[in-house]
Amino acid sequence: MAILRVAQMGHPVLRMICQPVAPTDIASPEFQGLCDDMLDTLFEYDGAGLAAPQVHVPLRVVVLTLDDERGPEFFVNPVITPLTDDTVWKWEGCLSVEGIRGKVERFSHVRIEASDRLGQPKAYELRGFPAVVVQHECDHLDGVLYIDKADRATLAFLSEYRKWGPLDELGELEDEEQEAEDEPQGLEDEDLEEVTS
Ligand code: NI
Image (cartoon, rainbow, N blue to C red; front, side, top):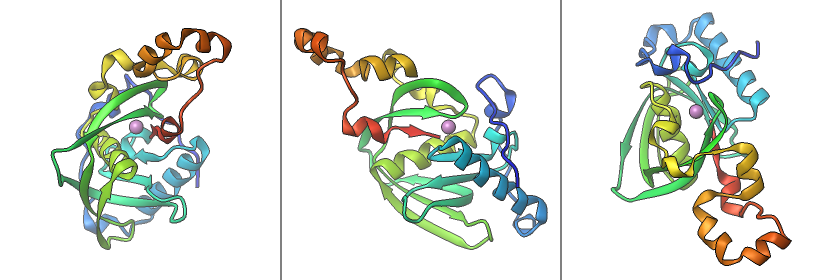
């Protein structure tokens, strides 16, 4: 097992359309080793999720923590189907776009079908935060980064985001200018649910 280097934006592997994992490869030591290494890497970087291209392997595999109690789980050859036209805007970050946050629009309710790391099929319907994480991760498999979809006016370096709070709340900050001077704007609870994956 090993902690792998995370590819940063600009590396071509992050823009590739990843290949499906052949069912006959799932039990192989190479594939199981990749899964172990992705888990080690996810823990090391404390991300909500990680996609194989982020560790320089262009295969359709992601590992996600949908539920803290269940812990990280693998989705091999995942397929996402939106179950609504309704969308949510959430703050996202990405281990491959270090030090930046931005607000992204995602479907609020999706179904994901995939195999687990042993090749067993599984499917979930997800809403809210877990739905956002799977959409972010599965975009990686098609060479898409969250920053491609973010509202550009919200993009912020993490240092400034921590200092000033989310830019979409700046209007409120101006209204409460005196208060802002007295007390730096902290993060609201919902912002702590940002996706870094
Ligand atoms: Ni990411």
